[in-house]
Every structure is written in C-alpha cells, then in structure tokens.
Image 1: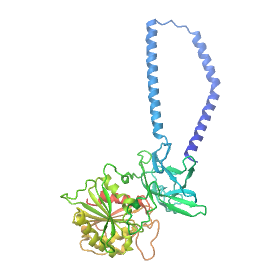
Image 2: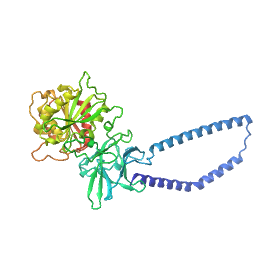
Image 3: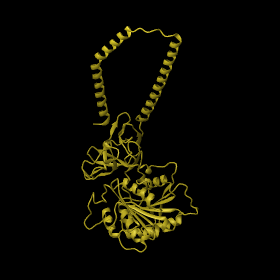
Image 4: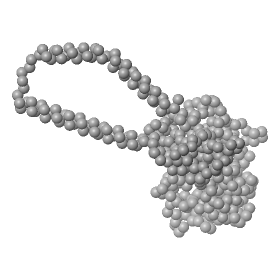
Length: 486
C-alpha cells in the first residue's frame, strides 16, 4: 500500500475512534456539567470591588492576547512548513529534484518527457534506483528495494545480486493537460544516470537520453570510440541529514557553482593516430605561469568507455572542486587499444605525459603524479603499478585487480597502491566467481597480500555499491582524501 493511502486510512481510523469516544462519553459529561451548574447555583459569593474587577478583566485580556499571538505564530510556522513541503505545481521537461516531507528520503525526483513520435506506445524511465539493506546478505533475494521502500541506512546500486535485478524501471503516465509523460519517486544523495525507454506497438524498445537533459558523454563530439553512456542523462539527488543520516552522503559529486574549473577535450598524437582524445580538467584559478607546477591524476575508464566517462558519469571534476584541490585531471581513451596493456602503457608514458608537460603547467616528478582506473581500467592500473612505479607515486585500482600483472619490480616500494571493490560488485567473488584460468577478483589480491604484504599497499575494502559509479566515485574520493599526494 502506498504511503499516502496508508496515511488516509490511518486518518479515517483515528477519526472513527475519536467519534466513537465522544459518543460514549457524552451522557456522562452532560450529567457532570448539570451537577456542576447546580452546585454553582447553590453557592453564594460576595460581589468583588470595581477596581478588583477591572484588574482581573485587564489580566484576562492580556492572557487572551498572548494566547492569540502564540496561535498566530503557530499558524505561521505551520503554513511555512506546509509551503516548504508542498509539491511544485508545474514541472519543466527533464528531471527535477524537489524537497518533500512525504518522501522517505526527504526528496523526490520528477521526470517529464515530451514525445513527438506517433509510433511510441509507452514510455518508461530507468536507472540505478534500486536500494539494498546493508543489514541483509546480498545473496538474499528479498534484499532488493524500490525507491518507495527506502529506509534510513539503505544504499543505492545498479544491481541487487540476490535476485540479479539490474536497475529500477517505472512506466511514465501521459499528462493529458501538458502532453508530457511523467513519473516520480524518492531519490537519495548522489549522481544517478537515467534514460527513457520508448516502446512501440510491437513491443520494440529504444533507450534514449533525456532530450531536455542530454548525456554529458556527448560533450566530446570528436571521440574516436563511442562510450556506452551516450544514452544516459544525469540527475543529482541530495542528502537529507535526518532521513538519510545512516546512508551515504554523496553530495561531494554535485556541481560546485562557486568553485569550478575548466574541462576541455583535446586531441594529441598518440600510438594509434594523430587525433587521439584526452579529457583535461584544470582547477579553478589555474595559472599556466605559476611557479609551483600542478600535481596530476591520470585516469582510465572501464570496458566500453572512453575519455568522457570519468567526467560525465564519475564527476571527478566536481569532486576536485568540492575538495578545493589544486590538481589537474587527465582522462584517456583506452578502448581504442582493445585493452592491449603494453600499448596503453607505451601511449601513456611516451605520448600522453609528454603532451601534458608541453602544453600544461604540470610537475615532471613522480611524487606529483597519480594513476587510477575502474574495472578494465583497474587492470590497467595494476599493470602500471608493477611496470612503472618510477613514473607515478600513487595508484588507485577500483573493481578488478589483474593478478597476471604481479611481478618483482625494482623501486616498487616507492609507490603506493590503493584498491577497492563494491559490496555487490561483479569484481568480487561474493557476487560472481572467476572465469576459469582468470584471477581478477578483489579477494584474489587480498589473499595474495597475506603472504606478500607490503606497507605501501592499502586495502580500501568493500564500498557500498555495485560495479557502478556509486562505488567508483566513492573510490576516487577516498583515493584523493586518504592516499594521493598525502
């Protein structure tokens, strides 16, 4: 039963109980009142002096005035609270997040889509709006909750491993007055990628990004490799310190309008061609002539991604802004190399870094460089760590260590490796076992470290999330706040 229906039913039940109570007590109360009146009539009192009566009347007036003032104050407060909780009456196309007293999270997200295609029979909105209870086992098939079922302490994920449900989908209703397809549900803190599913009369489905809120992965029209995120738009949920107090506060991925640097997509000559792509983010106040060169983080996406992913989906620029860090971020396209690690390493060491040193005010010292990546990019990071600890001082591998990269390397004690995985991540053996002959799971590396522990290897552990951007944004945040350049 939905909350508003439950509240209405409870209200009716309470009203019925009150009416029943009044009906039962009325005769008794009437008898008491009659007896009291008779008692008052029988008593005789001396009349009060005029001055005393005036004084009492003035006191009564003052008390009444104070009571009326308090009542007005209470009414104003109640009106303000109602106004604050009121649902907006008019929604623009796109995704709108608004504060709501009725929402279990404190916020609602409203989607509005204008359809101009006569072949469309229905429209749905879908995204990683599933929630899990950290108190339950991830293999428990009941551990999969819709946004309406959210309780304080739950965390969002694109996958509930128990029932293997991927994402949450809700059919949108056509508003005859506005011509918009609409849907809304509770939302928590963080960034959520969503898209619309257009279904025709034959049942064929077409996913699209929101025309009113295009995918930020489209920001580089010259990409040599098309990322799988081109059909994903972004909506930011917000943190409610009361209703989400036990859940993750991921507001550090939200845009910081007061402190934002500049993101550019540039082309450089690399191993494959003369027009390979980089994403380069320079922090607010970047000074090309500053005496102290900037520290730099080089980042790899995962399978099916490109140079836009870490910005479009991971919001590393927003994270850097919110941390107030004077750091340059560089993202690359490694999908074009079909994950040939030798070529990727050659490209980074001999092409990307020299390009950055020639065109930007970046440090040329290993202590001021970091490298990190997710999934296939995590495997890339492990190869970088074991092959080039002299080029980067800090490494961050998120969701997918590659055990084949391990080897004895001179000088590796000078570099630090930090690695993480999601609580319900396919890069964890808790969710999905290794393919035969491959060791790419978080637990494989943890087991290895039991006999080959090094002080400069940091186990970041399990983070709430799946093989998704909830896990990877948290991983980057922790990498930057706990490890890199510390």
